[in-house]
Length: 331
Image (cartoon, rainbow, N blue to C red; front, side, top):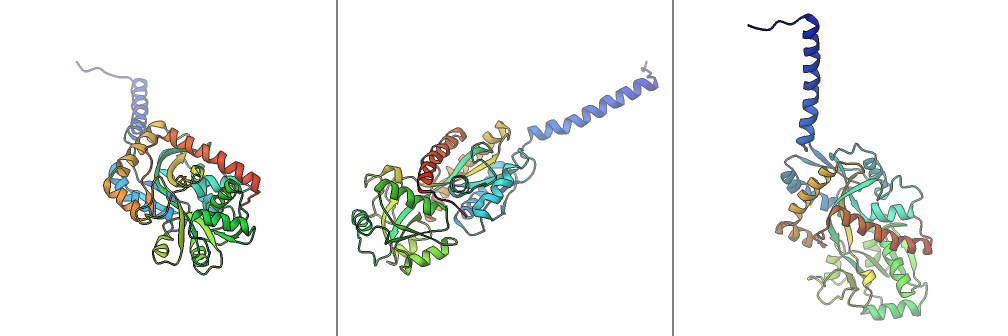
């Protein structure tokens, strides 16, 4: 015999069914992450080193995650504008920022109010790459070795000029750290971006710089610039005669620059873990290592999100002390 229901019974069952139906999509979405495209916000213009690394990862990362990975370039204020925007984005794993030492170290240390805290406002995911830094001089500079270079700068305090991509940029911070370690006196000449500073070095408008290797390598190989030292775990295959800073006795200067991936703080730990696993799977592919090396970069170190955050915190302390002593301010 079929049961019969009164009108109130039917209303209660209808409401209960509607409530369960409303809950089911929420549970499904939580279990099925990612259910829609993931956006990698690059806080710099297209074509720069951070953008190139992001684009190297986008396609293989989309395959690893099983969802499209989209690049969104949002340039401005040395990476601060986009980084601040992502820090305030919904922490659901769908909006990430491609972080770097410029946006997550130099800016917070040198800008009055970048709009975010690089540690508190983000959840680290993983490194994507490490950029090799190189100490360069114009060939007209009468120094063939690092030792001769140090002696020359000390003999002419304040006379030699060094370049950077702008006030408070990593190029300036790298040289200021070297100056503090070696008690050197040289004059900072900032430029607007990497292209103009390459031209300035080649024309001897400035005498030296300490910045990412990639844009300078062709000019070193052509004899237009001279490399005296590299910040790299080992010597660079393309520059076998150039020693590392560690070999020269200055391990604190031997740190590579990093490019990484971060999400807004409070992103669910399981989403961070899934993203980290996918990045590691891509980074461990031989093709990725070859692609990075061809661009003057190194594969990421094997680091958990917690280790990546700890490394950033340590560098903020080291560079922060130097920035305070030197009174460096960004634009």
